[in-house]
Length: 297
Image: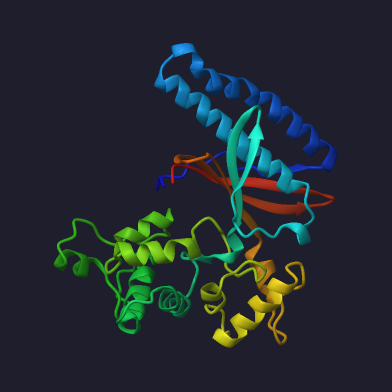
């Protein structure tokens, strides 16, 4: 997936339900010309025009799912990230919604939380030795100082490793940037990427969709507690996410409400458009802010 997010309007937008329904109708009218152009191949206008029509259709599909998201009550917004195929203006598209509060924010997570997450997702031999070093290197990449975390990596370590770059000393701009952290290999990145995010401005974990590995990054939350919560959640997905008094309400409030909304053509993941969307309750309505857009897998 492209590492460069495309920011949109920074101002949040709020809608009452009738306006959301009007917005859905308006979006359907807007994507119809793009869908017709895509179906007809733009009458030989060329690959570039065809790609423009495809992108317009898929961005429209993302916005339709955002509008639908706004119609849901807070207790209904639980998404496991499964793809749904639907027809939009006569064209088949696939869409999904992921709850990003179920992921660890690598710009905020503590070194201990990062170490537990790496140990939880990397099943290869030697992870006990690798996890603390890589967690420290991740913190060194994002912090502003040049002092090495114990076991971490700063400018001189990258130079000694033959790298032509050094730690950014600022927050990660994308999950893909983890590729540049000293000690990160492709195998670990592929295991780690589905559990992390950079789009959330806050920490916290939402207990309704978090995986076992993510739950185990929480303070004093071990494998037995994680498994117990997941079992309870599977029996009643809408039940409050609680475990022996663990303050999930507090953690969920800290995490906020942010979702990844994606759309693609069936069988063509390279066509995918994705928006990270933050929701905020304002009076009787829900406001939203598109944090960024991304294109590609």
